[in-house]
Length: 273
Image (cartoon, rainbow, N blue to C red; front, side):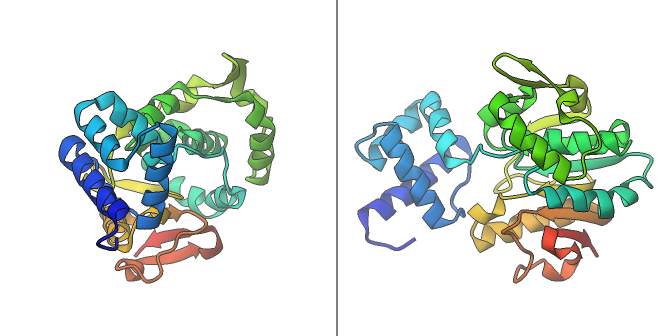
């Protein structure tokens, strides 16, 4: 961030304060994206200045929890980018089928849409029962929503279209029940899912995995943090494990580019060398 400008100084002090007080590290997030989110939070939460917001969150964990809803991006879709899930069926599932059991890490799982999407895919491929899925995020409120497995009913039509484009083999409505003014997804889909707080900025690897899906997360990181995250993924993946990234994300020009090979470059699926 540039030096001298009062707003930029306040931003640097805010992220440092968050790190020291709550151990959440936003210091290597994209400056432009972080500034946009903080200023939006300042307006929506009615703080006169960023400094006033900092003073409040240092003393009030609930105020920090509200700010976290703006600093993270708890927005996703089920079967988002359907071609990605179709590519998983074609290129990754046949390899996973060779394992008696396997582990999947969904990093930055947000409110759980991708978790349930992948669980449905694995069930249809006969693999869900032998899988263990780690779904991680830094936002406790998002993780709580993901555990509930309840999504907006008015999104089901769009999700159904995505599901079929992703190679869905059944009626999408078979996987949920209309309840609580939303769509409650079959609890058995999450039976093998462990939801956990994990930060790609500060935490380390916790398990060996055969597939990692981290999509539309690293676009908010600067290059230093992107390389740290990719290093964690490389360390976590088993020999010849798979890594899936978001449509606007790439391994090109990263410190880890030579450690992976493309499996389906258009769909951002790579394999550890």
